[in-house]
Image (cartoon, rainbow, N blue to C red; front, side, top):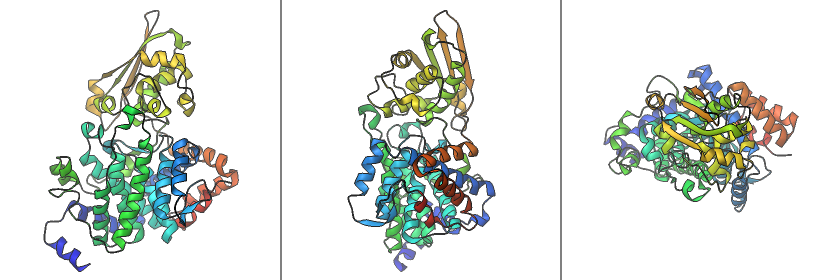
Length: 458
C-alpha cells in the first residue's frame, strides 16, 4: 500500500478521495433517523420488486446464467441457489430491475437501489455484516452514486449512456468498500476500478433489446469485483473519475467533476429518492397519475378523440419515452409515455396489468392519438419537480384536463404493503412478516447476513 500513498500525496485530492473520506467515516449513529428509515424503505422496495419479478424472462435468464458457475456463499433471491458473490449480485440486480418499478433518483436519472442492494446482500453472504454497517454502507452507495450522477448526466448524455449502469457501479463500489471495512486508500481504489467498469448504452429502445434489465446486474457485479480487488491490494487510478483521461473527460465534462462532494447541500441524497407508483419508466409516472384523474371524468374512453401530454425535454428525449407504437414487447410499452397514458385512460388504473395486453385496440388507438409537448413551467421546474398535464379532447368537442406539478410517490406504508403482498405470494405469510421484521431490526441488533436466508422461495 506504500506505493498507493506516494501516488495520492503527489497531487491535489481527487474526487475519489473526497468520496472515500465520506465512505470510511459513515456511521448510522451519525445519521438522522429519517435517513436510516429511508434506507430501510429502499431495501423493502427492492426486495418486493425482486420477488414479484422473479418469473419474468430476463429474471429467469439471469438466474440461469448465475447458476452456470460453481456454487458459492451468496443467495439468489427467491431461489435455493447459492453462487459466487459477483454472480449473485448480477442476478439479484436483474431481479430488482425486472418490473421497471425500482426506486428513482431523478437528478442523476439513476436507479441506485438495484445496484447498491444486490452488491451489499451478496457481500453480506460472503463476509457477514451487522445491520448498522449494512445500512451505513447503503447510504454511502446512494450518496456517492447520486452525487456523481448529478454532475455527469444531463438529458443529452442520458439519451445515449445509461446512468444506472454508469454511476450505479461507482455508488455500489463505495457501498461495498464501506461494508468490507476498507480503508481510505482501498476505497479510492474500489471507486477507481468501478469507474473503469462504468457503462451501458441506450440503443435498446430502438431495436427491442432487453439489455436495459441487465445493466443493473453488470453494475452490481462490477461493484463487487472492484471492492474485492481493492481489498486484495490492487491499485486503480485515484483520478479515474476526474483526471485528464478519466470518466468525466471521456464525455468532455471534466470541469463538472469539481462540484462533486458528499452532502454538498447539507442533505443526504437518499432522501431525494422516490418510490414509483407505476411499474414503468420514471418519465411516465406523473403522466399516468394525471391520466388517472382524467379517466375518472370520462365515462367511456371510446369518446376520446385526441390526447395531449405536457411534459419536459428530458422526458421526451429519453430513449423510448416518445413512442406511439407499435409495441413489440412489454419494455417498449413501459417506456412509452403514449402507451402508459393510453392504458391508464382505458383501464382506469396504474398497475402492472396495464401492460398485460399489448394489442389492445383501444389502447393502441389512443396511444397513436397522443401528442407530447414541452410545457415551459415543467421545463423550468425539472429536475426538482416532474410535472405533467393530460388534456383529452372528446368527440363532442369538450376538453378535460388534469395538471400535476410533481409525481406523487408511494409512501413508506405503501412500500411495506407491496412488500408483504409480493413476499406472501413467494414465501408465505409467516416468512414475509418475519423478513419485514428482520429489516426493521437492522439498525438495532440485526444481522445483514441473515437477510437473504429469509428470501428463499418455498
